[in-house]
Amino acid sequence: MPTSVELAALDRARQIALAARGDTEPNPQVGCVLLRDDVVVGEGRHAEFGGPHAEIGALAAAGEQAAGSTAVVTLEPCSTTGKTGPCCRALLAAGVVRVVVGAIDPNPAHAGRGLTLLRGSGVEVEIVDDPGCLELVERFERALARKRPHVLAKWAMSRDGGIAGPGGETVRLSGPEAEARVHRWRRALDGILVGVQTIVADDPLLTARGELPALRPLHRIVLDPTLRTPRFARVVTTAHETPTWLCARDDADEARAAEFEEQGVRVLRAPAGESWLPDVLATLRLSAIQRVMVEGGARTLAAFLEAGLVDQVAVLLSRKTLGVDAVAAVAGRTLPGDDPQALASALALHDVRTEVLGEDMLLRGERSVTD
Ligand code: AOF
Ligand code: ZN
Image (tube, rainbow, N blue to C red; front, top):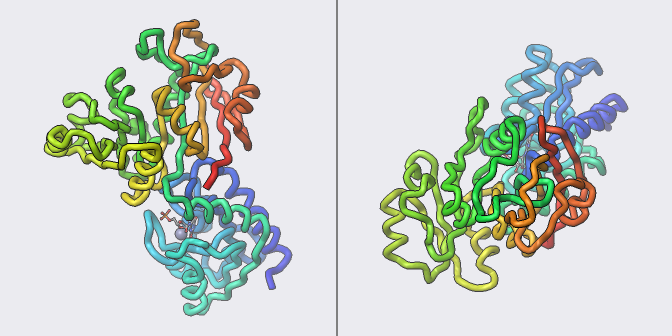
C-alpha cells in the first residue's frame, strides 16, 4: 500500500507534470518526486517533446540523496532507450529502493516491462491507478492510436485578422519575444510543415535558431501536390544540412521529383483525392514524425482546421493592423485578432491559455479531434 505521504507526493508529481501541457504531445506529461524518509529530495518533469524524462530531472536534483529513496512517478518508468532513457536503469543506478507509479505506460514498447525490470532488481513497486494520472495517460493512449503525428498549428495574426499584406507580401507581425518562443518550439519538434505557397512567397529557411540546442532532428515538410517548389528555394538548397521533404500527389511529375531527389530532397507521395492530406500525415507518421508544427500559409491552415487534423493551436496576436485587403490568416475565415476570447471560440478551442510575450499576446488552446 502506498503511504499517505506517497499519495500526496503523487498528487504533487501530477501537478508538476501538468505544467508541461501542450509541450510534450503526443507523449504524456510526466512528473516525478523523490522522497527520502518522507522528505522531498528531488522533483522533475518531462518538460518538452524529445527532452529528458521526469525521473532524470528528479535524480539530478536529488544528487546523492537519491540513494535509498522512493521515486513517486505519474507514469511507469520507461525500460528501453527511446529519444532518451531508459529511466529504470537510471533509478537503479542511483540506488532508488521503492517506486510508486500512478499509471502503467500504455505504450507497447514499455507497458509493464519497467515494473518487471524494477521488481527483478529488488525494487519494491506500488501501482496506484490514480484517476488523475490515468487521465494524463488516456490522452497519450488516444494519440498512440492515431495514425498521424500530433499537429500543432501556429500563426501570427494582426488585430484585424491578417497574416500577410494585400499582395501576399510578408509583414513582420511579431516582436522578438514571440519569435524567440517560436524558435524554442521548433527545437522540440520532428517537423515544421508549410504549404508550397509559403515557400514561393517567403522562401523561408524553417530552421530552429535560438540559444538552446535542438532536441530533435528537424524536418522541413512542404505540402506540394504538383511539385511547384522552386528549385533554388532555400529549403531545397540547404536540404543536405536540414532534411527537406516534399509531399506530392502520386501523379506529380516524375522527372521533377528525380531532380529534387538529386538535390537531397525526399519526395513523399500520396494518392490524389479527398484523403490526400490524411494520407500524407499517415505517411509522415510511418516515417517516425510524431510531432509537427503547421506554420502556414492561410490555405494550409484552413485545410488542416477544416479536416479536423489540428490538435493544438498557438496564435501570436500582434498589435499591428494590416487593413481590409490583407490576406486572412485562415483562408475563408474572418477571425477576430483583437479579441482572444472570441478568437478561441471561433476556433473551437478548449483549455485556453494566454500569455503576454513582449509586444504580442500568445493564445494557446486545444481542439477536440475526431480520431
Ligand atoms: C518515462 N518518463 O518522463 C516519460 C515517459 O521518445 P522518448 O524517449 O521521449 O520516450 C517516450 C516514451 O516514454 C513515451 O512514448 C512514453 O511511453 C514514455 N514516457 N517515460 O519513464 C517520462 N515522458
Ligand atoms: Zn523514461
